[in-house]
Amino acid sequence: MNITIVCIGKLKERFWTEAVEEYAKRLSRFCSFSVEELKEERLPDRASGAQEVNVKESEGKAILKRLKPDAYVIALDVLGKAVSSEAFSAKIEQLGLDGKSDIVFIIGGSLGLSPAVLARADERVSFSAMTFPHQLMRVILAEQIYRAFKIMKGETYHK
Image (cartoon, rainbow, N blue to C red):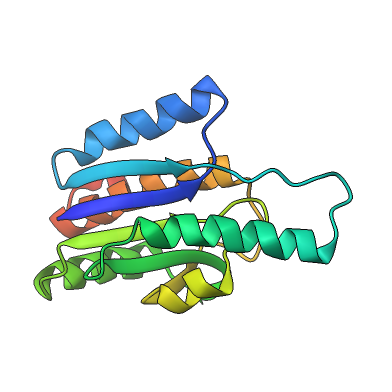
């Protein structure tokens, strides 16, 4: 199984990078895991609504270019379905059983995801009704993917 996180922006702090690298190392036992960082568009201070829409659309086009037609796409969206770690694990396991070998998780930039990206997603998942910095969300997602595999294998990390 190939799992990719496609995200807007680079991790700026070393501690975020090290955390994602640690989970990537742990995940290597279970799957092929990668992160694709895309350019974050500049947004002027006091941007207008139209400027914000343009930034989301530009970032959305960059994301859509990275998606293979047969990839199963899960968008992280505050308005998506909230799931438990066990349900998240079951979903990933079921996708593998269904022959979905490429799973792509998408994390948008500070403005979220464009309507085109949300329309392309096979499903939307919310990790919380709260808003998190997209750098932190990358770490949380990597950890939850790792947790999902540990749950699938019945290993003790989960509790």
